[in-house]
Amino acid sequence: MKRISISAAVCLLAGCSEGPSESEARDALARFYEQQAARRPTFDPLNVGKCQAAEGSPGYACAAQGQAAFNPGGRVQRELLTGTFVFDRVGGRWTIVGMR
Image (cartoon, rainbow, N blue to C red):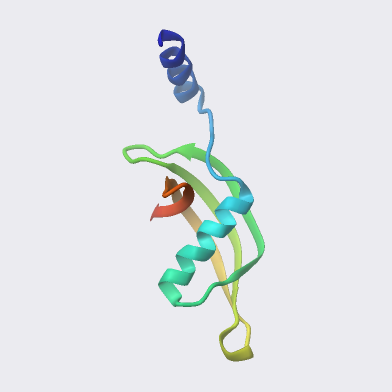
């Protein structure tokens, strides 16, 4: 038990990072935008930066940058995506639980 606690403390101090993979982040972002805009976007490109344990809340804060493309009625609409999103596991999959 002490070994686990020490490992966790060292990981926190050293800035160990875990969190969603790029494909998991892409899926979570698509679901997030679908809930907000009632349309599921595609991303091209999408770069997910290094994730850090979120301070003061559960999950991991990950910087994301790219372009979201929506296709309402056969016409492609593109929006710039830049921000830091907080991802956490909800119901067994990564979900966006906040933004910074």
